[in-house]
Image (cartoon, rainbow, N blue to C red; front, side, top):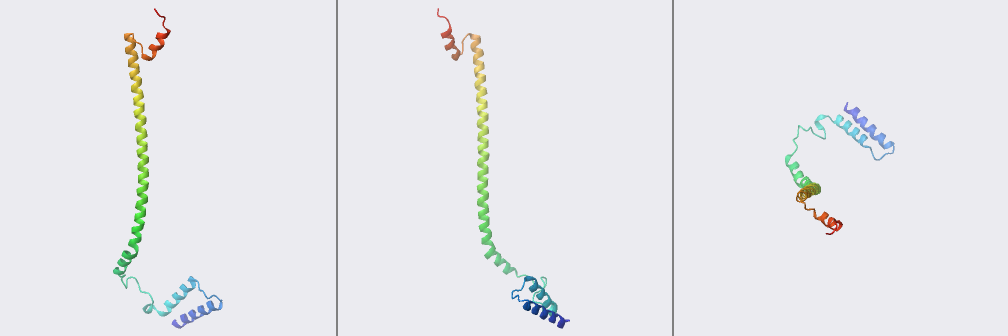
Length: 146
């Protein structure tokens, strides 16, 4: 079986070379490595099973601390700056809206209070026979002199 697989590998190599392609595609390289792995057998494979050899935690920790941590810090600073800017803009918009609403309500109440005061003054002035200041000047000029 090992000899037939070795012959298959040789036939595959000759087919690649004879087709004139010096650059092999990823599929042909993968197929060749699979054939080689089957020919060599499980005891001599170039890779090991993940359960057979634990991943070195120190290497992973060093990679994360040296390579990934600075990148993550850089991205987190950018993200934080963008979020802070958006929040500031949003809060300014909310405050502007609240200010406009309060100003509109205060103006409405002031107009209502002024209108009520004017109505009260007109009623009081009418009862006492006193005319409103704006009507007094026009009524005096139009009234006949004695």
